[in-house]
Image (cartoon, rainbow, N blue to C red):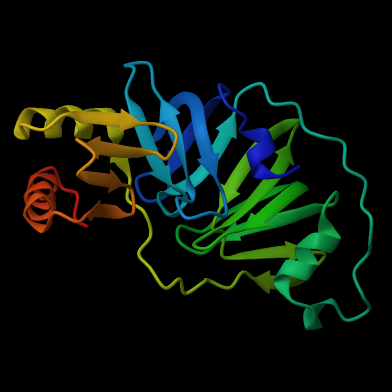
Length: 224
């Protein structure tokens, strides 16, 4: 069970941030676990679209998601410490393991349903007491006393930022004389087809407009 399967479009989910541990609830619009955006677009009860990068999240809990019954296909070798953490996870799918975080010291015991390694993040799907939890960027996993630390990637570009897409679109509409629209398929904010604001940054051939947009976004706390 891949994370994307658990978080289908229109599924209601709870999002827990990785620093404040604040939890927010909303409906899934779009998600990506190993592409360039690597995050989730959510629509909350105020009708605001948010983009949550995986790097900003600790956990996602889809509401009323039925866990898949997965049977283990392979077993671990005699010396399990010698294998890579990704191979260890592949062999543990369907079995119970402990997923651990160093800071703050937290651990979850559950049955591994699936996992994905993306550009910026590791995403593990666990069944805990019959409910599905998606854990993001744990520090290590433990299975029958053997630990594997999950290595961090060194991507060649900056991770996307957490954004209130609706509020940012409305703010840019107010600041600019251009036509500003929110395009959820990407997701991005289209400024009269002259500049595009993505969670990863701003793209435009018009350097003056790009600097102008960047200045407005800095006022909102977004730095690209």
